[in-house]
Length: 248
Image (tube, rainbow, N blue to C red; front, side, top):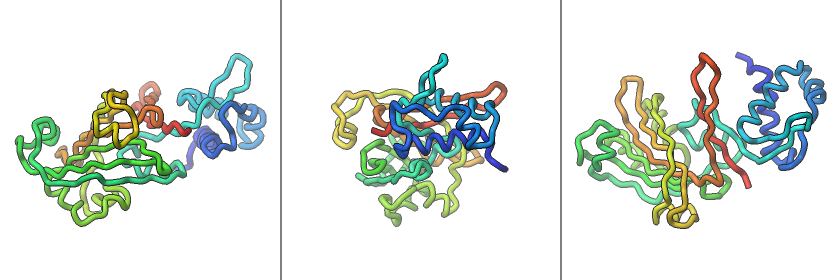
């Protein structure tokens, strides 16, 4: 299926903003210029501009041309599960530094999330995630034992855990996300380079297959000066959760 024209226009503008071709503070091309470039009516152009305005990437209005507010990139919800895929899709380089991976008894909150008995064996992973070498997110991920054991023979610094596990038949296509804020603890502070107590955006996620069995529980903590979340919805349609990278 061909991508709708307004989405093509919005994606092109995002790319130009992210690359610096359209710098922060610079005006966007006029509607007439974009109509000519895309052989489009004003409707798709205005839809594209509305999407970027909702994401906070552009501002202006009331007769003034829109200008670039910040170099932020957003991610559709359907690709939200994989940090690596999201970053690569933006044209940037994802990175990860594994701090530890261990087989442990499940604490009560993790056991509840994974529908296990407290103390059941689970595999826990602590990884620092980076965008173009910049610390961006710290993930504390727990897998049920049979799934987690597949990571002991995998270089967790080499790329996406989801891609590796998916290639081995693990289904994590269904997920529930909770977004809140949390104060940085000592580990967050040390690895993310923020002061202790610094407010972080947290995404708590439980993921599993279509059979309803959870296989992963993750506590992912993002620097809010690097990443933001946006929810967009259309009447009679499912809301879409977007994750945005605030490039410096």
